Image (tube, rainbow, N blue to C red; front, side, top):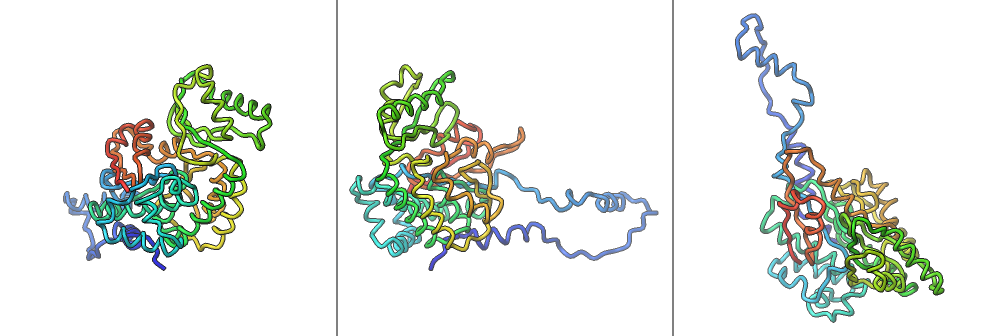
Length: 375
């Protein structure tokens, strides 16, 4: 079955060897007694440290970072502009075989309610994002060949792992289908909701969630919960919990010093304990997949840091379902640079245009060289 590694597998594995390969030079004895300028330079070169000799000089502007969106960015009609790329169409054809239904038709025609269901939205966003890479590959091939890091928001983390060569495309998509179905069942067991919350610097968002939780407890809500599901940027978080908890925050937003709330197009409280029933099925499916070492750095949603090993991916990825997405922290880790050092180009590949505006809030300079490839 097709393994979607684009150009990364060959190009990225080959690059380090190309950079470190040295031309074979004829060794000649150096008469230091002559004291010529050229000979002095030779001696200086011989005394250079290993680090100075071996370290390649890489212009950050010539490297790239690829970001992938998560569930909630889907919309009817997405992927239509990508159909002019044969490889993008082929990706959807293979996805149809893996999933057992016509995903492209659902993306193009809907209906909206069906597309928004978790079981369909997650595969749709993942496949559309990978298809968007085909446009990037056609228009800017160097962006993929020179990619040094990737990250994905929530579901997008699995897309990033496929892109980085950790999981083959077909197995990755099947894994997403298992994840989506398991999360949909968890949603059916415990109705949940998520909302973007913008708040003032003096707002105690933790206290606001605690009040919403207590209100749910007093009302007798089964499995009450309210807390941060996603860390977005300063003074902006995605709050997740029972529907009743989100409604409480909406009704009391003024007294809680919440400036604005916007519901997300999801039908569950993702990245909270309410998703616990989905962890075991996902972990079981993941354990059956032979993971490969990442070709490039892949950043984890759980702690915002790059994975160090395949074993760590195997251990942490299931936990992502019930842990907050630390996206703000991830952006800080990915784009931390010394003053005066240029930033890599960033490409957001997938439906919607939500990640670049977030990057702008976290690191405006990095966002100056960010581009969106719409699915």
